[in-house]
Length: 269
Image 1 (cartoon, rainbow, N blue to C red):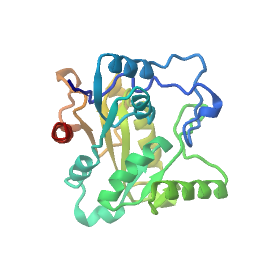
Image 2 (image 1 turned 90 degrees about the vertical axis):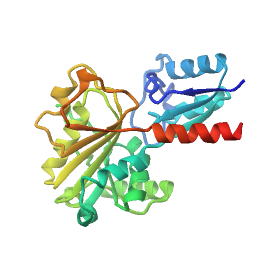
Image 3 (image 1 turned 90 degrees about the horizontal axis):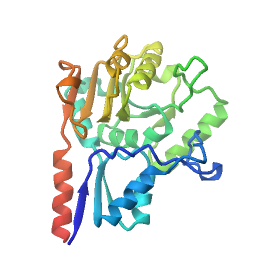
């Protein structure tokens, strides 16, 4: 028997805290509390106990998911929506305007997803590092120019992508910004980030997000002074009638990618 678990969205995706200061994820500025329970590890362990051999998940929140699968002898498959996002965004941005399009990674964790889409669209990537001021507003991280340039160089080498730059107002003014997120929960962070970009006088902003978590009150936060030209999400979490928006959010399906992976696995078996 061979069991394949197809879980487009794994609810415990965030519950994988870093247990010590020395075990920080690369470039992360966050350190979790040492007494937090590792629920992501627990759920993957339970899947292995239930006999799961392979796991398919779209856009995992962190690389811990693959690591835990390896620990418990589950073959992990990440479903990447980059091609669907790229194809869809090109229906909204005229080809003659693609030269001013920029993929925006609002934090270090979003850079791999941004690079994947940028390779397809042949656009530069602009990144920021999460920085919350005391008033909780998102802002551009201001560090010594030398430090930021060295960090940009490190990112370029690590991701093998040359056109990767830390954000400055000059780099995004009059540009079309395509912001990439793994999920939208309350929508507040995405909205704050987009309004920060508007202060830099960008031409327009698109939001791409894989998982439509959409917690209580999300409309008021996500659409506050609506800074987005269009929001595009996948169907890893079905948006029922209660979470419809009358067209403000465009849905794309990841069924073909999941089916393709399943065919490859079945052929191998």
